[in-house]
Length: 252
Image (cartoon, rainbow, N blue to C red; front, side, top):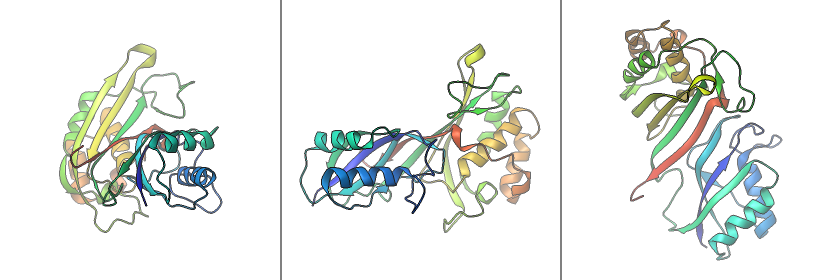
C-alpha cells in the first residue's frame, strides 16, 4: 500500500479550519472527499500542522495511504480536478516510505503573519492581512520579539483550549520585516519552531503590535513571558493574517 506525501495550499477563509468536522466545511474534509471521488477509497489524511478557521497555507504537508499504486502526477491532477472550485490545490504528490509521517517526522514548522500598516483598509487582500491603521515601529517590535526567542514556558501565549501536554516550546526564529512602500506597506512576522502551541503565533503577534506602538516595552514582553501574565498580552491577532508556509523534514 503506497504512501503519498502531498504539498497543499489553500485559502482558509471559507473553511472552519483544517480538521474534519461533521457539519462544517474543512480543508481535510474537502481533500478526503476528493480522494474518495477519485479512487473510491475512504481515507484519513495526516497533516503537518492543523490550522484554525481562516488561517491559510502555501506549503501544508499531509500524507495518505492508497491501495493502488497510482502515478504521482495522476494523484495530483485528479485531486485538483475534484477539488474545484474550492480554494484548495495539491501542489505536488510523491511516494514516500511508510515510515514517513507528515506530523511526527516534522522537525520544524514555519509561519508568516501579515499586517497591513496603513490608514486605509485592504480591499483586495482583506482576507489575508490584519489591518492596523496606526503607525507601528518595526524596531520596537523586533526588540520585543527577541525576548521570546529560545526555550520558554509560553503559557501566556497559549489558548485556554490548547491540548498540548506541555507549554514549553523552543522558538527558533522571530523576524519582523517591513515590506513595500506607501499604500502597499506591510509588516511581516516570520517565525519558526519545531512545534507551536494553539494560538501561540497569533498571541505573540498581538503582543508585538502593542510593542510596535510603544504600549509595551521589550522588558514588559519578557516579564509577560516569565510571569505567564496572559492578561497583559495584546489582543489575539486575527486568523486571516496567518499563513502556514513550510515544514522541514530530516534530509530535506
